[in-house]
Image 1 (spheres, rainbow, N blue to C red):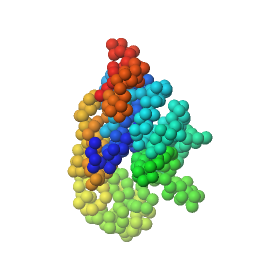
Image 2 (image 1 turned 180 degrees about the horizontal axis):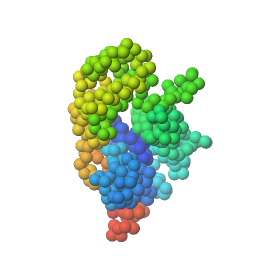
Image 3 (image 1 turned 90 degrees about the horizontal axis):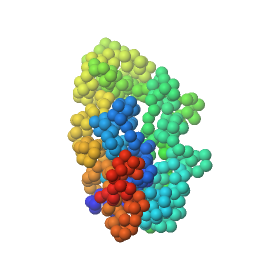
Image 4 (image 1 turned 135 degrees about the horizontal axis):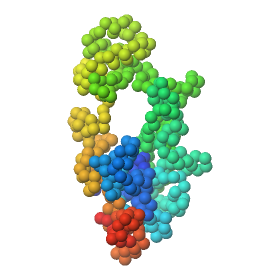
Amino acid sequence: MNPAQPLAGVRVLDLCVVFSGPFASMILADLGADVIKVESRQHYPDTTKGPRRFTAKAVSMLDNTLKGYVDADPGARPWNRSARVDVVSRNKRSMTVDLTRDSGREVFLDLVERADVVMENNAPGLLSKLRLEWDVLRARNRRLILLRMPALGLHGRAALSGVGSNFEAMVALPSFRGYPDLPARDQQYTFRMDASTGTGGALAVMAALRRARRTGEGREIVLSQTTNLMHQSADVLMAAQVTGKDPDHPGNGHVRLAPHGCYPTAVEDRWVVIACRDDDDWSRLVTALGEPAWAADAELATMEGRRRHEADLDEHIAAWTSEQTGAAVEDVLVAAGVPVSPVLREPDKIDHPQFVSRDWFLTMDHPEAGRRRYPGHMWRTTAGKLRADRPTTTLGQDNDDIYREVLGYDEERIEQLRREGHIGTRYEFEETDDPQDGASGGGAGG
């Protein structure tokens, strides 16, 4: 533990799934919190860790959100080689316990007494089914903060389950995001809600921690992922009320700026984005283009005029960019002071000069995924260097430390929990494929 890290000494119990919740707890771990992933050997989270079994051929048929396995090979334990798991799991510890049984529930409540925060983003009724509602947790620890991140709400008609694309539709993002010539049903889906709410959840916890330190009282926080996301389209909502009109699909255009677009380069399916914020940017762009005759039109001297002729402008600019590489266009326009960037693909980002100069990517060694570079921290602070000392933990890797040091259990109780199947480093379904592993799941990890 580094005492200079802002959340050093804070303990978080992570019951989160998929992306938004794990992303929130990873931010807290980056800031120094001791985040413990509470996992189960009996209940495999396929929506979080992906399918249990895969062939390499099957991976090639997946979409980009699922196919991120090392060397495109899921291996025998794909959940330990999955990018979707690794990218939100650094700096955490893992322990196993089955919360559906009374003995496991009591283990968790013992942990609650020693924790500052519990986080979850499961289906709305899960904590009730486990008999771990807020009043139960609070009775064990009055300083506890419980962050709940339902898709919409916890009760009544709002108690819905789903994924980001469902609820992005509910807040109308597809109605104004996408290409002008495509209806909403044909636009590419996104999962913007996850990263947005993950950040919001981490900030909500930090605000509650500050209050708890001052008052000695914790609180339950219910952060609706859908309504959190709705704030990011508030301007469109207000405009629709004022004008009475549905929003347009702007594509790569802008409601006020012109030119503002994504243009082809000399390399097939490689693009570059150019934007002019004002008339000075336009003047610099014209100079960089060599002051072509078409740019001398007096109407183009003002933003209003350029907006009226936006389609023609895009054609002229595309004719210029399509004869060069994205890097060449970037060099010319950066030197001229015009906002520009090539559209990078994922491998491009790793060695891009801007990210390299900031030393942004984190290099970590994972026991099954190998040595990889991971997305870096969201911010830096003079309070101390943020954590980057531990890659994604494997199932039950920290059982020994948590059961012995955090919980203080003696060997007799630990052995009993192991015999009951709570403690182990393998999922129970794996034992049918490896009979030599033993019914106990291989003992406690460490």
